[in-house]
Image 1 (spheres, rainbow, N blue to C red):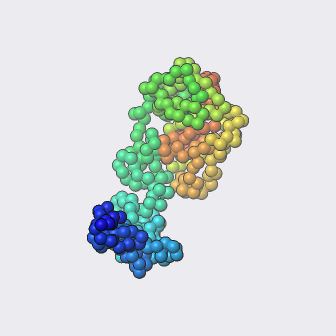
Image 2 (image 1 turned 120 degrees about the vertical axis):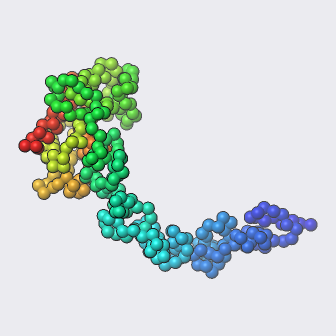
Image 3 (image 1 turned 90 degrees about the vertical axis):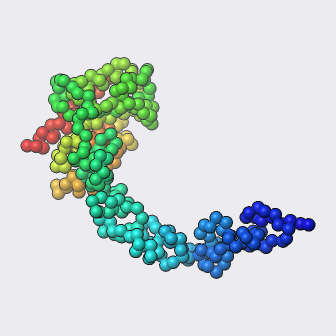
Length: 351
């Protein structure tokens, strides 16, 4: 006697089984896995896992687009396009929210703060959540620190800085840091001070927050102890803390940088002028600009001779235009000049 095999449950049966949609099924499996097409409803389809399914007719004739299903309830209905979702009117009325920024209805997960709700598009473009208090603030009001974003009331102070007792070469207690790209070094410097990470040119050593002449001495010791070697792709990046700058002082600083750009570039190798990692200019500031309008209009590219996007990420501005060099005295003078310049702009902005 011949036995027949069910394609769904895998059991053997002593009688002939029927075929459904090309599958041989026992009566029990046929009742549970043969469902109406989710798109046209006029044909049956084999769906062993209960998923939304379409019949061969809809697939072969490419007609399933005529019968879309709601992304939330999975039913075939007349749909609305709401953001990246296709949603039926019932689900839309049940779950809709209005964005407090763009005033457009949206559905799905949003960002809620203080009774206000934001769609994901507006939140990613214009807002950030404070790392400490979780308050949602405009990006133009954000100050970064160590890759996290903070509101004005929560941004960390200089307690993380390696303090200095003398300020003969750097005439300010303003914090700064340096990133040195190397081809390689003879040995790894002090891990308690320098952070190492891979970079396109080899390896990059990142200092902690430094201050005054003590910071310059730490940089000098790095060069003396590790004996770094460089290639043409290596650069020297200096970060200067601007977490204490007001919006108006940031605008004054950018205007000063635009005015003195050529002076800065005269100190560096000409190969850095059009370099893809530091050759771009910073956007123009117009007389009517506030920090909010300037930030909102331009956004900022990281790979510019002066990286303003670091304000949002690290709470600093980053001078990227200097080439890496083995002359550590030149590096120290470059760092001191930048820190003193930024500090002087803030002082003059207060007048």
